[in-house]
Image (tube, rainbow, N blue to C red):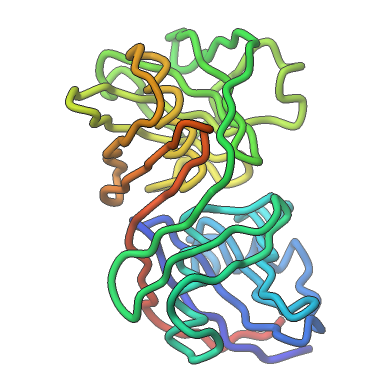
Length: 264
């Protein structure tokens, strides 16, 4: 059994447990990750980030709170970047972090909000419907390296509890499941949203989700690219800028809170 230090941090209250494993030698069982992320019996978090170095570059080994693999996380990668700079493992400024969705470049100041180039955000031509708590809404399928179904509602109060995952049909568009975002347009390029994350449940924020919402909102309101959106999530506010080639830059806070000594 290995004793390790986990750092708890969050980006707009989308929270994570971070493990530094620069030599890429620590194996953490998915069941152990699920236990640590459990809010009743563990520390509690939306995801788990193992920070490793491969071929001279930092790599984000990201897992959902149930221990399942995920491509990356836009809030989590900002928190990881804050950890690396604050612990003097990486100089501030512009640098890349590799992920299962490829390299992401971040602009990281010594203090303050962090920006990450999330890459291309793409809407699919398929038509989706989201069914939840007796309601049904058309949804726009979007990929940000991971899948999203974005449904627009008149008010987020219509959505009700997101304890259970919404049903998305047809299921063959995203056969491995999808994140689901519900969006209320406020006007002036601002929206409010809630999200049910695949493998985690409802979270206070979702970095890839807000990027998906920014593109879907551009389409929904008949705007053109480039576009900038201010997106209010339960945990705070994020900004997404999408250029004319549909590349998204996500900007928001990243906070390190405390450390925990655990046995892995």
